[in-house]
Length: 416
Image 1 (cartoon, rainbow, N blue to C red):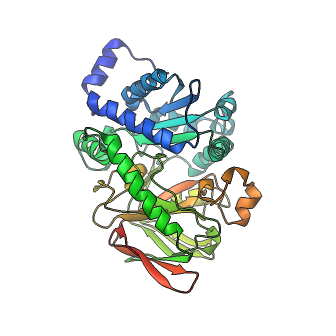
Image 2: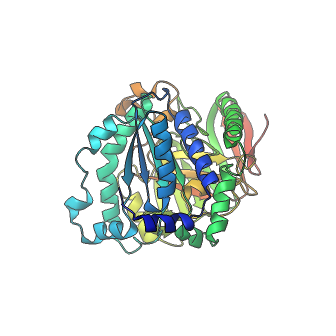
């Protein structure tokens, strides 16, 4: 773990963008999310890893203490700094880029919980790095992610993540650091005396919507906005997910569709920061699940390298809708976790290129083999990239019975 002198630590806390009360509440909400996300209850002696960027050290310390109080074994992992990341991709050879530290597989194979604290000190430091090298690193880590997905499917692992305010995030979102921190506090209900009560309320309301969606026999979903005309096929044996505790904040309701039934045009009007690069104005055209064309107003070369990462990177792994009545996020945050949960005036929808969520299988996902998943159209890839649209839109369910039903309009789910 990164070491700080006492003087450095005092200066860090003096300049903290979040007060102690909000840090304590943030930790409480993250642990609530972690418990909601795991099918099995946590027990004494379980292992939870806390991965964090150096800027989020304060929050990591509070979580560490909380986990110890619960008699859980916390394992801390500090993410590389922007300088380290850039050095790896510009100075490291192929073996170093794809290197996985000894012991990582063993840790993940025994892991019960994971909390990630995203607090970047730069969002564009890899802009001039070969995207192919970044893709190589992602593919090298995929076997580790597969281990976590198997443990999650069996109920042995729960995970959650959050964002901690940094000046880099605030600058890209065109806010002051204090304004950015206030957005996080508001979005996560940390200004409330009992934020967990508000999260439980959102959890219950989202469960009702998921139940109503699940009761429909949907053959296809038709998404229409100024720049979108897209049809998504949910597929067989699917269930709707969302507000599960896995992301803080999270207000989206989503599923992993049958990628083979994607047709039409999708447009992301929200910029996306990914792997130290910015991409904006992404336009994708699909035919029978295959990506026929992809363009971007900014960062097109990076986009094309990412979707060429592997055979599944140009397919849809997720379709999501956010109800503006849940979300208090009303500004661009330059952070996917918040931007994919944007409420604002018209809510948002997003698709993710790349890997699907096995948890969207309506049954025992732990018993599903990779072949079973492929047969049902669950996409597999080392990539998972959320691309957000906040335009006014209508989503119509084309029912298997032949009828049509508007399920989402003007930023919220309709009553039916």
